[in-house]
Image (cartoon, rainbow, N blue to C red; front, side, top):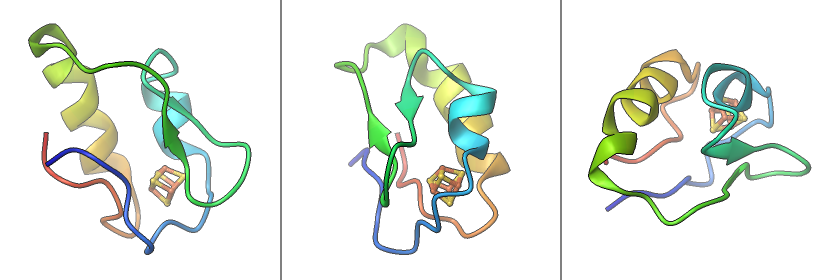
Length: 58
Ligand code: SF4
Protein backbone atom coordinates (compact mmCIF):
# COMPACT_ATOMS: atom_id res chain seq x y z
CA UNK A 1 0.00 0.00 0.00
CA UNK A 2 1.55 3.30 -1.02
CA UNK A 3 2.10 5.82 1.70
CA UNK A 4 4.76 7.42 3.84
CA UNK A 5 5.43 5.97 7.25
CA UNK A 6 6.61 7.49 10.50
CA UNK A 7 10.26 6.90 9.64
CA UNK A 8 10.18 10.04 7.46
CA UNK A 9 12.70 12.69 8.54
CA UNK A 10 11.51 15.35 6.09
CA UNK A 11 14.75 15.41 4.11
CA UNK A 12 13.07 16.46 0.87
CA UNK A 13 14.67 13.85 -1.34
CA UNK A 14 11.42 12.33 -2.55
CA UNK A 15 10.09 15.71 -3.66
CA UNK A 16 13.37 16.43 -5.43
CA UNK A 17 13.29 13.12 -7.28
CA UNK A 18 9.55 13.11 -8.06
CA UNK A 19 8.10 16.59 -7.53
CA UNK A 20 4.87 15.62 -9.27
CA UNK A 21 4.21 12.96 -6.65
CA UNK A 22 5.58 14.22 -3.34
CA UNK A 23 5.75 17.38 -1.32
CA UNK A 24 7.61 17.97 1.90
CA UNK A 25 6.23 20.83 3.93
CA UNK A 26 6.29 19.01 7.22
CA UNK A 27 6.83 15.52 8.53
CA UNK A 28 5.90 13.14 7.16
CA UNK A 29 6.13 14.05 3.50
CA UNK A 30 2.91 13.79 1.52
CA UNK A 31 1.81 12.15 -1.68
CA UNK A 32 0.08 14.91 -3.62
CA UNK A 33 -1.90 13.03 -6.24
CA UNK A 34 -3.93 9.92 -6.71
CA UNK A 35 -1.35 7.48 -7.97
CA UNK A 36 -1.82 5.95 -11.39
CA UNK A 37 0.04 3.00 -12.89
CA UNK A 38 2.11 5.45 -14.95
CA UNK A 39 3.48 6.92 -11.71
CA UNK A 40 5.18 3.68 -10.70
CA UNK A 41 8.59 4.45 -12.18
CA UNK A 42 8.94 7.86 -10.54
CA UNK A 43 7.48 6.58 -7.30
CA UNK A 44 9.96 3.71 -7.12
CA UNK A 45 12.87 6.04 -7.89
CA UNK A 46 11.86 8.21 -4.95
CA UNK A 47 11.34 5.13 -2.78
CA UNK A 48 14.86 3.93 -3.58
CA UNK A 49 16.29 7.38 -2.86
CA UNK A 50 14.63 7.78 0.54
CA UNK A 51 17.41 7.44 3.12
CA UNK A 52 15.19 5.92 5.80
CA UNK A 53 12.86 3.60 3.85
CA UNK A 54 9.84 5.71 4.76
CA UNK A 55 8.07 5.27 1.41
CA UNK A 56 5.89 2.18 1.37
CA UNK A 57 5.66 -0.07 -1.67
CA UNK A 58 3.72 1.19 -4.67
S1 SF4 B 1 12.84 10.98 1.02
FE1 SF4 B 1 11.98 9.77 2.70
S2 SF4 B 1 12.68 10.77 4.59
FE2 SF4 B 1 13.01 12.20 2.91
S3 SF4 B 1 11.14 13.47 2.93
FE3 SF4 B 1 10.79 11.81 1.45
S4 SF4 B 1 9.78 10.17 2.63
FE4 SF4 B 1 10.67 11.61 4.10
